[in-house]
Amino acid sequence: MPRLLNRIATWLFGGSRNVARRARIVRARYDAATTTPDNRRHWAAADGLSARAANSPEVRRVLRNRARYEVANNSYARGIVTTLAHDCIGTGPRLQVQHDLARELERQFAGWAKAVGLAEKLRVMRMAVAQDGEAFALLVSNPMVSHNVKLDIQLIEADQVATPGLVPPQQPNATDGIEFDRWGNPTAYLVLDAHPGDPDFAAVATAKRVPAASMIHLFVPERAGQLRGVPEMTAALPLFAQLRRYTLAVIAAAETAADFSAVLFTDAPADGDVSEGEPFESLEIEKRTMVTLPAGYKLEQLRAEQPSTTYAEFKREILNEIARCLNMPYNIAACNSSGYNYASGRLDHQTYYKSIRVWRNRLETTVLDRIFATWLDEAALTVLPGPVGEDVPHQWFWDGFEHVDPAKEANAQATRLANNTTTLAYEYARQGRDWEEELRQRARELALMRELGIDTAGAITPITDTTDEDEYATQTDAN
Image 1 (cartoon, rainbow, N blue to C red):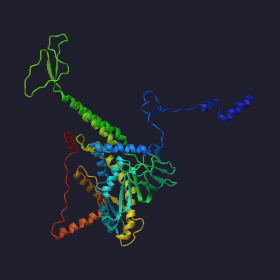
Image 2: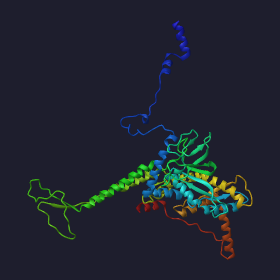
Image 3: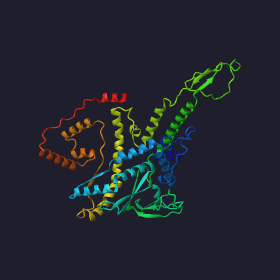
Image 4: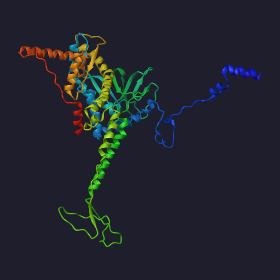
């Protein structure tokens, strides 16, 4: 009987060695998952909260207030946020459509965008995402708009989109101020009648329910299930505090050293033959005078040692770390390229420009396309001869990025056009211009030149830049 059982076990499990191998439990180990006395305090704040729980209304309120405080009181924070908005939005987007009424559509939309201040409002929204975490824009009808299309964009701060009450009720298909359907699509937004920071804001506030079709919500989701945004500069907030503390400490040390003109001391032993002096007694010293010292005493002037030699390096590293969470290079954040050469400056800018292109795409899909669709419905009833259809093919043009060496860029552009590796549409789009409008303008200029008898047959000689990049880098480093 035991022999039969062994044969059955061998047939089922492949022998006793395999049985032992299958019974062995394999355990993997990660150093980062190990808690030791050395790292216990470092990981004490780590939690397993969901995105919704981690970004609770109170957490977002604290982060917003602190980010706004830094932007309002820290020159670097203000400059970084403003630069982000200026570089991303520029002078505003320009519309190009593919339609029989293309030129009329583009002209009317440009006039409306200027009337409502579209570019300025987009810059405010970009700044709000950086310091508040999110931006809200309500599509309303404003009879005061100086255009036949009365559509307007009313910006709302994130504080005002909230569920009224001291303790907002937890609903399965709703978060703070936003209601969702079963598939996670926003259906309505709750907008408080007054801003919570207004002096006349009542504790028991009321809110109006705004349909999702009339509200634009712009934020950067960083986790699955995240429904509200946190400031983009959240990770840098402690660094801003360190930067200001260090600067104030250096100033305080310099002022303390400057408060003392000189120190009177003696090298004589305690029982030596020297004049008695009161410890920490202050003496007035007149200007441009020579004084005699008590017997056995020496006079030494304090040496100013602030700021230290590491002061500039510390500020540079802190600013570099601050700007990293915003994909901004140091020389743009500090507005200082003295330590850069030509190649490293362009390399750092590539990451920054890619981030801007991603942000512009987000603005097009989340903000501009929705604004254009709403504007088109009203324009078809007011400024256009008739309906143009529900889906009008279009694209948006933005300000181009200026090249640090225009001569090199112009020659490179001419080479790409000559070997057919690019198109006029693409090259003009890189500059934020409409190629059709530019060609029409150029044709009008050439026609006028021929009418005035100005020679247009001579070819323009390309500018040859003889400056070597290594020489340029050496000169930049020297400066």
